[in-house]
Length: 64
Image 1 (spheres, rainbow, N blue to C red):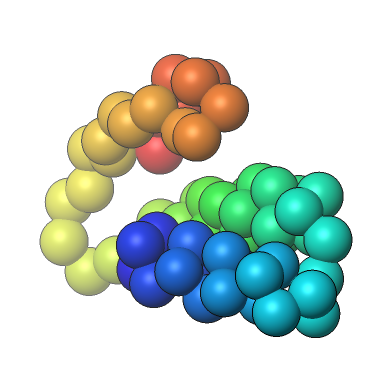
Image 2 (cartoon, rainbow, N blue to C red):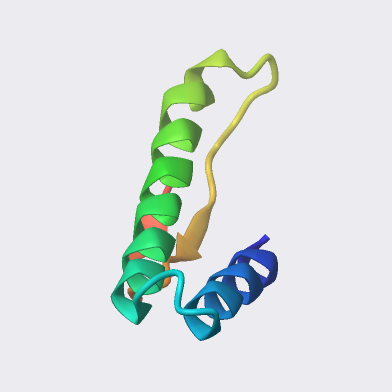
């Protein structure tokens, strides 16, 4: 998904539809939304969920 989003955004930048800063901010926004959804949904899992750790695009270490 990251590759697809990047390809679309770069293409729109080349077509002069968006500014480069729009692309940079949209990736951060998309990551924040995905993290928020994972945090909200973790209490609804039927299985035992002990979480996971990953590094975000801004090099933040996160544990869900």
